[in-house]
Amino acid sequence: MQRKILKYPDPVLKRKAEAIAAVTPEVRQLAEDMLETMYASEGIGLAAPQVGESIRLIVVDVTGPEKREEPLVIVNPEIICSAGEVVSDEGCLSVKELRSEVTRAETCTVRGLDLDGNAVEIEAEGMKSVCLQHEIDHLDGVLFIDRISRLKRTLYDAKVRKWIRLGRKL
Ligand code: NI
Image 1 (spheres, rainbow, N blue to C red):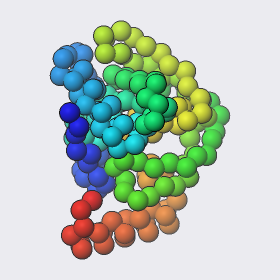
Image 2: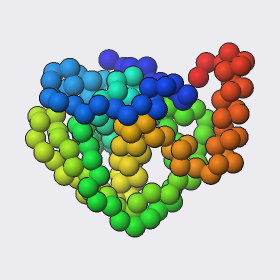
Image 3: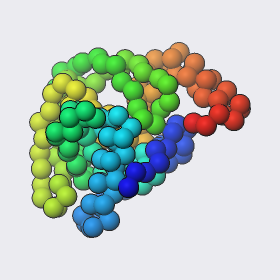
């Protein structure tokens, strides 16, 4: 089932998400829904808070939405090491009509659980590394617009306030 994606400035997006105590059928269903929602929205990553569930679950597929070859679901993901620096152009399904350059680690290693509750460790580089860092940020209530220049952020906030004032759907 596709879920509705919350948009900035929804307060759920600012909240620190709770760790998942057990991988239950509900968690597995949510992961499935999130993948479906992500592909349908032509995204390459999605975090549970974006669909209103403030828990530590992310899905990523940098081959999507066309190929859908590498769906990756991580429960309680944690970056255990990272290296280098890379600047890339980012957007977010929860941040309407904005893309901006963001500086992140070039490579990272993420530890967490899969949907069977087994420990997994993923070494990532390139777009996958950037995407994992972006999604894990969501679990801490951080959006990519928290990592852009102050001027760009101020301009964007003014635009969002205007949309809200005009009653435009976010
Ligand atoms: Ni995002």
